[in-house]
Length: 333
Image (cartoon, rainbow, N blue to C red):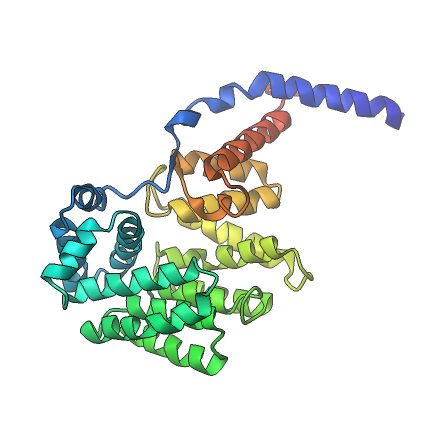
C-alpha cells in the first residue's frame, strides 16, 4: 500500500505544481527588475551628486539628520556614503580639503575606517587604529549615538571584554535608548559567533524588542537572533518556540510597511530566509511579495557570491512549494 501511495502523492504534487506555479508569479517583479541594495529615494540625490564629484548634497543630508536628531536615518546614510566613498573618493577628498572639522565629515571618516578594518585580515589592529577617529566623531556631536555603534563594532572586532562592552553599551543608551543600529551591534557582540551565546543573544533581543517603539526595526532583533542561530548550526541551545515567536513578531512588523518599502527591506529578506528554514512556505511567499524588487546583501551574500541569483533561486523554490500545496480545485485535492 505504501509503495502504491508514494507515486500517487508524487503525481498529485506534480499536478499541483503544473497548475499553480505560473499563476503565483502574478505581481512578482521579473528577475531583471530585482535590485541589490538599492538606495532609498531620499539618499539617491546625494549619491548622484557625489558621483559627479560634488559633496554638498551629502553634507547637507548628514547635517539635516544631525540637526533634527534623525539618528536612524543618519546611521543608514553614513554607511551608504562611506561605501560609496570607498569606491569613488574624489568628492570625499574635496569635502575633507574644504571642511576638515565638519562633525558630519568626522563621522564619515570614522565609518570609513571601521568599514575598511572589517574588510581587512588585520581587522583587530586596524580597528584599534580607528578608535581615535570614532572618539573624534563622538566628541564632535555628543548626542549622536552613531559613533557609539561604531565603538560597539570595534569592541566586537578587537575582542574587548564584557566590561568594555557594557560601558560602551551604557554610553550608547544614554544617547538614544531605542537606536536600532546600536542594538544590532550589541546583539552581534553577544552572539555565539563572537563573545556570547545563543541564549544571551535571544535574551537581549527579546528584551529589546519588548521595549522598542511601535514600528521600530528593533522589533526584528529576535529575528536577527534566530537568523544567527540558524546559520550557526551548532548545539541546539534555543527552543524552536523562540525562533517561531521571533518570526511572528517580524511578520507583524513587516505588515506595518507597504510592499516594496525600502526601510524594512533587510528585515524582510532576513525573514524570508528564516521562514524558508522553518518550511513556513505560505508565510515565506507573503514576505517574498512584500520584498518586491528590493533584495539586500544580507542574508544572501552569506550563501552565494551572487546574492541576486541566490534570492531568485529561493523565491522560485518558495513559489514551487506553495504551488505544490495548493489544491487542484476549491474542494478536494
